[in-house]
Image 1 (cartoon, rainbow, N blue to C red):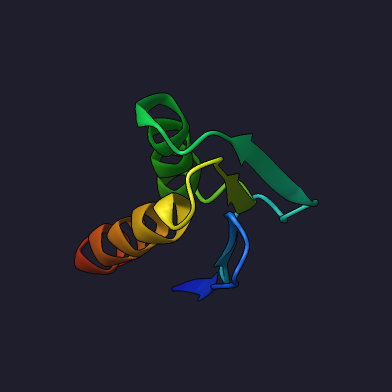
Image 2: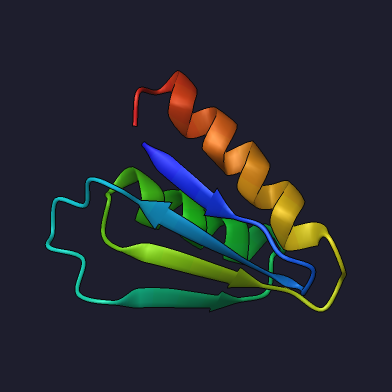
Length: 77
């Protein structure tokens, strides 16, 4: 299950509650464009660790994180 912590800043914390690799820390992704979101998708699918998604455009990380959480819920993650 994915937990999102939304805030007023240009970052989002994506918590994977059942990490299979031990969850040693947090992976920060700077940029919520196609490459950053692609990396976030891969990290989430592999359940590697929690993610912080940061972007200069206000609201973009939050929107991408909501899309990611929706996709992961459909896939049963």
